[in-house]
Structures are given as structure tokens and as C-alpha cells.
Length: 221
Image (cartoon, rainbow, N blue to C red; front, side):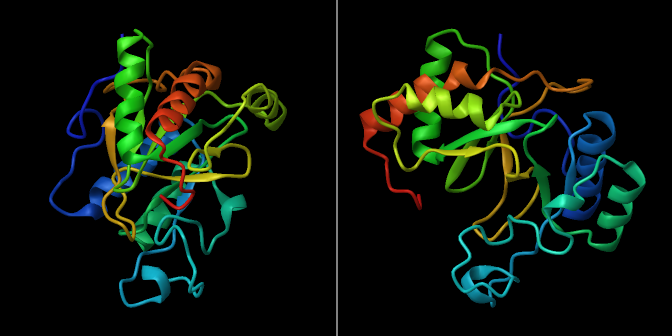
């Protein structure tokens, strides 16, 4: 009842260098799944905070929009192909919200525990993105009002929990960012017209429970 496990499953396969895999993935996200994407700013180990942006306090090196900015995200196949032909190593950044997937992200260790808990409860999961320090569970689009009501009902929401909704973004596989490779922990089913996504309510309870139980609350983890 869940999506295929593992970073080697799903789409697209790696080809030995990131360029072809990135352009194929970006094209699939945009043209097939109708997820708006744009090229992210490149990581740079010599730059401030490991990013090629000028911000010395950058908290998401190589995993955020640069030029163009987030509003340029598109599902236009020709634009996407031009971008990654011009910048073959650029990370793929998803503009979350609207008609696109949203995400709930948490520190990697807690993310693994949350997925195990959801599995034990028999809850169906869609794609899960794994970066070296954080995992993100993709969910159906939600509004800020919907999220606010959901969180208001909680007695406590750990500071390490992040929500990627309208106006947000998330790096997608097979990008390489400052901290390292972004991969699928739960890959989309191969050949999907568009990956199935759970409601945000279906995962927040388990995620908050895991973070509270394990004490993983530092916002920068």
C-alpha cells in the first residue's frame, strides 16, 4: 500500500553524470507531472556557507532559487529543457503549493522513525525526499488557513518541523546541494501519470509524535 522503497527505484535512473539525469528528471516533473520547477543556485564549497549565493549565513546552500527567482517556476517543457541545457548541474527546485505538492520536513533521524511509525499504522505514503540532514514527506497541496487550523489544535509543535507550502520550495532528486546528494527514500512509482500524495493531516500527527518523543527540536537540524 505504499510507494516503492529506496533511492534506486523510480524515475529517473542515474547515468554516471548528473547532467542527463537532472534534465530528464526536471522534464518529467514539469511536463508529465505538472510540478512547477526551476534551477536552483549551485553549491560552492569555496563560497560563503558552501553556497554560490552571497549570503554568508545561507541555511540551504545549493538548495534554493537564485536567478531566476521562485516566481519563474514553470511546467513548460521547452523552458525547463533550456534551463538545464544551459545549467546541466543546477539543482532542481520545486515551487511548492498552489496546484503543486507541498511537504512536511523534519530531521533525517526523526524522519526515518516517522516513516516506520506510519508503516506500522498501515498508512499509505507517497514520495519521500531524503537529503543528508532532512527528509521531506510530500503531501497534497494545502492552504495556509488549513495548516494554521491543524497546528492550532496541537498542544506543541517542535521547532525542527518545517512546512513547505504556498510560496515555499524544496530541492528534488537527483540534485546535489551543499550538504550532499538529494535522493528518493520512497520513490514515485515508475510510469506514474502523477504520484499519489497523502493529505497533510494524515502525516502531521505521527511526525509531531515522533519529534516530541525523541526530543529532536533544534530548528537548524
